[in-house]
Image (cartoon, rainbow, N blue to C red; front, side):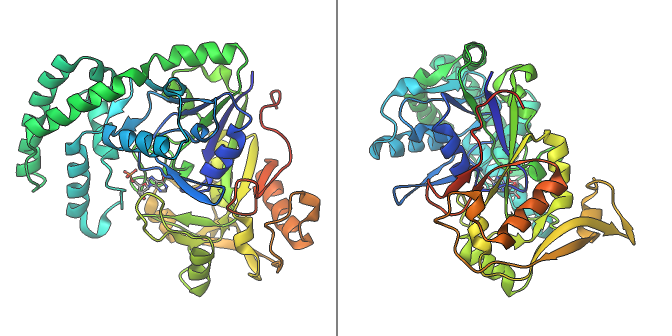
Length: 433
Ligand code: IMP
């Protein structure tokens, strides 16, 4: 059964949007399974830039079914804006093509307020969240006081629940977070409006997906953020509040792990990170600035400049293991044209010894000394190349080294922003590897 999970192998922003968009053209169903509108999947279609925060990238291909799984936290305001924006551009014509799990958690206005206030309190040690209320919404889910998408189907009950929750959260907002209280009437009115417009998308998506997978439909799971931002396996506490690894697709969509055939990890040809936290191969010099400018490395959700550095195989080996990657996609290879020498980090040294695995403590990750191998760069632009064999020999050596070290075959290489600027070695929806 061709069920493919695609995840970010680094700290997010690996260019998954474009890769998902390409693979979505071959899929029947595209599913998001974690995160929320902290994600921003950028796609360039016919010169037009489209950024999707919640709706799976498959929506840009007519006829594909798009599913928002139970593992997400959804801000109804953002969801509606995204639906309206896509419709206005003529990209989302059929409402039946979007299904949202009844079990999705909602982001409420107080989650955004708490997110921003708690970051402000942390001062220098702030995580650098996107301020979208992601962490506080997941925290309410875990403490069993959240709102779910199915609540939108029952307006009277929703109103009652909202009144109680806002009363309680206002105490927290004013006394602990130092923020202004929310106007309950206003929030209730807003949410009853969402209830009217959004309830029609609610569905039992776990059941639907199980059926579709068993009918051998081609299902693509679209991860958000990246492995190193995973709540359990990332550089905690500088992580997001969801599990971003491949295994999360099962929990976040309500399907069996036995249904998954392939796991594709996406990595840039270099590394970026946005927000706080350790980043062993970070470049602090002009080269880092150059990569940022050439790669357009500014957050698609917040506009923040991304920190840039060399590709890190110590980190990627960890990601390959945790996710069980069967395939690798390398993006933004074109950004490295003209830089020589190039460096690849092959391992970390800590107190003089080579580490065997990615450390748990962020203090150690901050203190490690990356071991680099130098590679001769290439000068030519890569945007027009569609066959791996036509890449400059230095580019091929660079890619082969990554592939050999990670022991994961490269499935595709992205060489530009446009939809078709990609070299694909084989199709993802093939039999089990
Ligand atoms: P939060 O997800 O807004 O709570 O932010 C927690 C951390 O994850 C911060 O360092 C964010 O910059 C980072 N983060 C969240 N979403 C993304 C993403 O889509 N790409 C890259 N970093 C992200």
